[in-house]
Image (cartoon, rainbow, N blue to C red; front, side, top):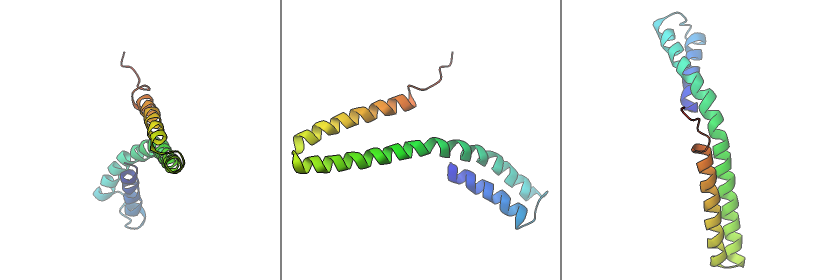
Length: 105
């Protein structure tokens, strides 16, 4: 969504500056696309950045921990910690997507 919004915004800028087609039906179409594209950029990119950062960081830390524990303590402790990390991540996902919804009273 963020990339599509940016593409629509850039299309309007190209039509206005490079093609010098302001006031034409082509420009009208790109203005409509820009009207859709601005909310796409403003909402989806801001909402997705924390999710991407959290999952990347969590994945890297979990893999590093699993590799170091597997080498030093064996597979049993690694499996127990994997289940614990999975439970924590499910809790965060539930709170992020379901626990913060606005009720429709």
